[in-house]
Amino acid sequence: MDAGLALQIYEGLDRLAFGVCDAVAPLSDDLYDGLARAALGAKPRLHMIRNGVDLHEVESAPVGGEPIVPGRRRAGASSATSAS
Image (cartoon, rainbow, N blue to C red; front, side):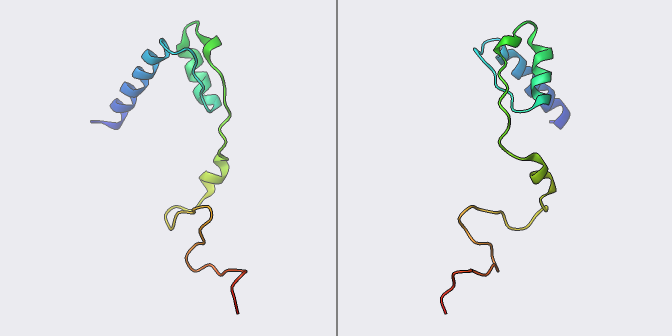
């Protein structure tokens, strides 16, 4: 299936589901604005929740490589608490 067509179908299902939801909480201004345009009078059910992820940090992260897992040292990293 074409990615563009799949996205259009997904967005259409979102709009249908919006009509039966008590509330919708978009995580960005772009999502909020898009839903507000599609809401057709249901804007009071929109509740903005700011995304807790710093998108600038994500966008500037290097592509590929080892994922960063909290609490786990990266391969090749030296430990400041190594025993001598």
